[in-house]
Image (cartoon, rainbow, N blue to C red):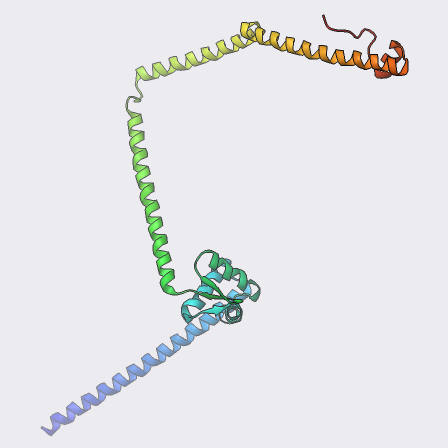
Length: 251
């Protein structure tokens, strides 16, 4: 009986030692992994600072500030926190924050002479839900348009099978189109003899003659005034104003 208890005690002691060793090893592994994660984060942070962050990366990191703190900030607070904790250049903090406000991702309210900024995960979640719903609706609409277009295509194919009769009709249609083009070119050649075109030209000619007569009246009126005012003869006036000697009304 004592031997039984002794063996049982030894077994329990051995199991306890094995469990303790396992726990110790596990803890060491977890601590190493945690250290590696921290080192990796620091390296990534340093690399991002060296290569510079894209606008989208800056926006994402700035949103992390709001989500992690769940607090209200002024611009001066963000300008202190963003460069230290998120590696965002101090010169770009204001522009990045304003872009988030413009996109309705960050709320802004003016109180007195100061602006206060905040953004909570719940709002971001709702915004993503609305965006997802809009995208799903667009996909649904696009699928419906695709179905409708496929129906139109199938309907258009009816009666357009590539048969001998259809090929013959298409050739005849092409020949008629070419003949029509040639006839239009012939008609264009004789367009000047078109009664309507001739009549239009006649009307335009009458209008032009009337205008010429008015300006001729004006020229003779100026010549008459010049004769009376300065006692010049016609030849001298014509030479002075560049008027041809045979200048007169049109017949």
